[in-house]
Length: 172
Image (cartoon, rainbow, N blue to C red; front, side, top):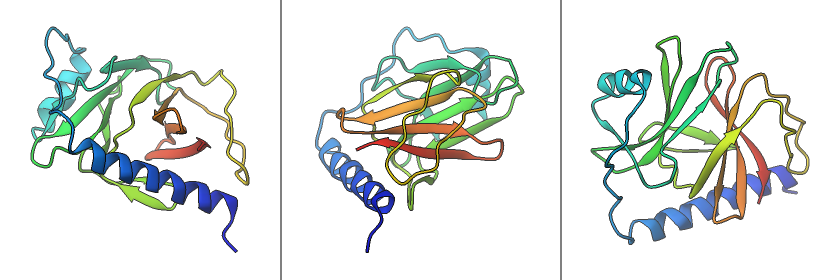
């Protein structure tokens, strides 16, 4: 018998995959004009020459404390130049950075994706309550997270656990 959590993860994967197939038929990604990136994000992108800033969503950059050290970090939408796969980069105040999607696999429950085609993202402060999908352990955030959704149906949080970016399913 398939658990509700496994079903939710499978359903999210199906929704994201269907969205990805549809998205490849749409207009090309808009060009970025007039966006002034924070220095931490510029530095991170220089170290990753196959990634470019993406302006497919507004905002393209989200400020938050994603590692819980009390300093401002930046989440930046990016696209892998060679594959056109979408994702985001987090540039930490420490100088470290991490990529999810944009050609780098990130887990969505039991499945890993290298192309993240969510169509909405926003800051989720660590002080905000975290909604949970059924049959899932409650999550207590130690830092800010990114709330992402796809067509207002599937949603969840990407958060930094100190070692890697993790996914936490919220709705489907």
